[in-house]
Length: 275
Image 1 (cartoon, rainbow, N blue to C red):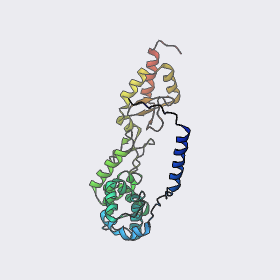
Image 2: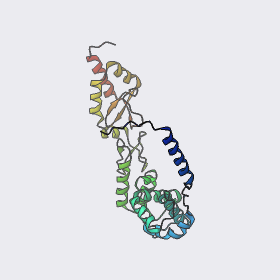
Image 3: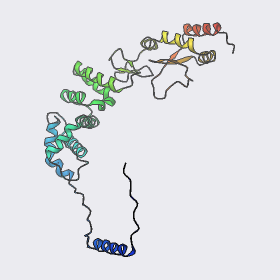
Image 4: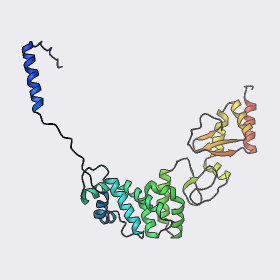
């Protein structure tokens, strides 16, 4: 443990002498100049490095417009040099691209998808295999193109990316195999529409509903009868008015069948609680 010693009271002469020395010393010191930040032209970098960047990213072999290639190389160069105050060389830029390659690929693919309505098989392959989460908004379009070209491998790759990044509660579509059945029972990828019975089967609704009926209060069961439907997910069955429902989660609306209503009434009649 370090202790700070008490300072002794200096005599007045010594204090005056030290103050005078400090004043003289400050006067002799040269003012410190702030280091000016260096700047460089992005246009110059693009002119110099565009070819190397496009080659490194494998874009030179794709049939995309030259002006789009230039725009892509510019965005990539801007992205990787944003933290530099002095002009980097080509090797430095390419190394930074390599360190952030997945982010860069997603940036590139996003630019291609927003700029091109249709593209050939080779470009489609590039987009699907390298696009990561950037391909999710265009999954339906990419799925259609993959089917057009007969590329089952691209469909499987697209499917894997979709299922990785989309909510796990989504039900698998029986036609395309993506976990993409929305709450309106339509597939957001291939447009297929499934029946409520399909959703019931996929969610194992019968068993989940029995568990729900056994655990719910009489008041809650009466409420469900009044509403006429329940919400179901992979985790269970819920009263639409339940506080257990988590905003943003996926729930499918399941209307009560006569057999469901009979099960609820039977459970209510077996209870001792009177409402």
